[in-house]
Image (cartoon, rainbow, N blue to C red; front, side, top):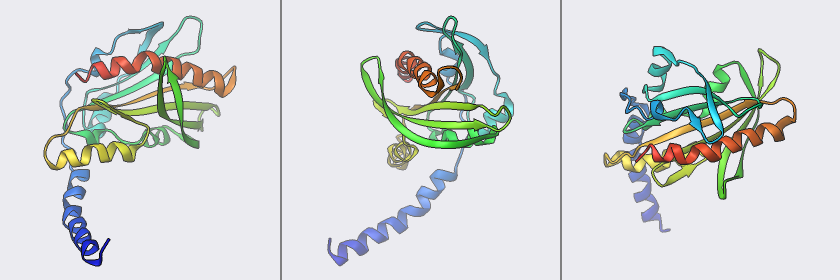
Length: 211
């Protein structure tokens, strides 16, 4: 690349920087489109066990009330916990899951990504292994960001999917999903199997709700 082209690229970045900063800081509250509320109470062999209210403060922090926190379980198995946050134009209501987990008195001891088989669909997901400082137990979280025709385990990838669209006011709807469980009998492998099995059933449901 020539020196002139480099200087031109530098000026473009300087001009765009205030716009991108403003987009990242501006967090309008988005009323719910009831996507999270329409998540079924039965998902494959998994049934809803409990609904955990997020409360006004939780919704205010997210910038949307189109979110849920639930417990699901298969018969005679340890439960999984689902956190789902949907967004429309306010894609900034979705943030890295690390923030909420660390705010829940968890210490992240491993931060990774891996490819999992979701019923024949190979999908890369983020994986966090946490230590609960309250319970002194390990806690496993698998997470995924999505939009119409797009999924990623990377928050950076999620941002770069939305930022160019935000510049031309063409933001698309999307979601963050977290599927989590306590590591217990069977260790991390059994915990990962529970989360992966639930994700295989839930991802098509989550994507269908965007349409």
